[in-house]
Image (cartoon, rainbow, N blue to C red; front, side, top):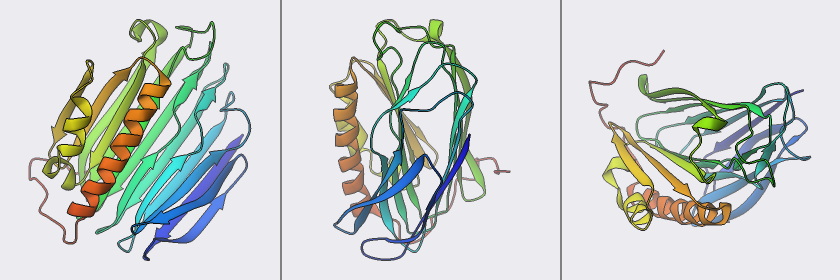
Length: 261
């Protein structure tokens, strides 16, 4: 089954939903609006991502809008043919998006491709939070088939990051930790490192890597609860950083970055 969903947020305080289209089992639900931010929930009806499912999601934020788009719950990945969940994110100049899809919980035999294609215009701000939680289903630790991630981030016409990684159960760290990755894209990320520095200090297995126009934060947690607490704290800290550093004028991109296709 292929399902498509598209969300467009336009200028407004808070942001206005200019378009909210979704095919079953996806659904958009408007959430609270506070301090100029609009929250929209992305819900996957049913009981997870099933074999051969293709869930295609698109989110565009423009006109100086600020939005948090997040999942309602974690997503189980069922065993069988490869399933695909792909997100296309576009953030226009002067706009901000914090995108928090649900944690992915692969069952025994699961095969899954998670795709992310994000483009941020100079002067835009984006943060993406991804969580993987293998082994969180009873008696299925270390038994998924493979997980593949394809991640592409661009700032304007310049390619900032390209990753294509395949992970098998034997590659996952002992103890089945929950892995969280945050991609912070835009000049605000390296300019305002306080949100990730303070969040990482108490964690034994965590690292941050500044990029030319962004930063990547990776951390391991012993439980979904600990990972969720970290995510919530980071989202709130990022929102505060963006309120202080929201870009109003495009800056010059580093000349060393390659051009995006």
